[in-house]
Image 1 (tube, one colour):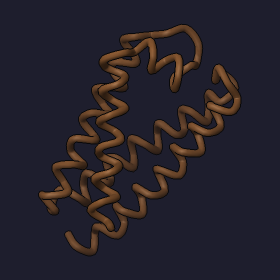
Image 2 (cartoon, rainbow, N blue to C red):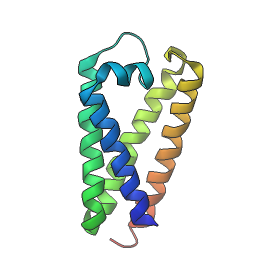
Image 3 (cartoon, rainbow, N blue to C red):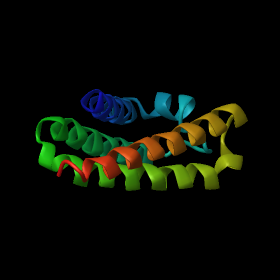
Image 4 (tube, one colour):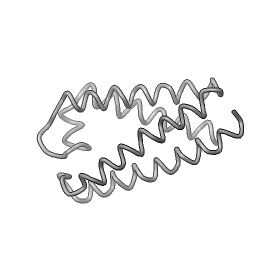
Length: 122
């Protein structure tokens, strides 16, 4: 179950990153509607998301990578959650803003738990 969870999170980060990199306008309209579109900033998010996701996917096979990569993913996702919480009032849609913030906080808790429990096998 742990491997499936890490794979799913890694895959999700890669897919979101590719979407942001390939179609920043669509990504902004659907998920990142916090004012005027900034395609450079969306591409930066895409690059970071792909990097974190790819390393999580590699960590599935290279178990020595799991603890450090899960800590990095937890910190990155947690800081991303703080950003969404701070800008909640700027979201184009209150429902989308609250949903994204809740998913980011929940994802951070899950990543943190995975990082914490991975130290036992490291």
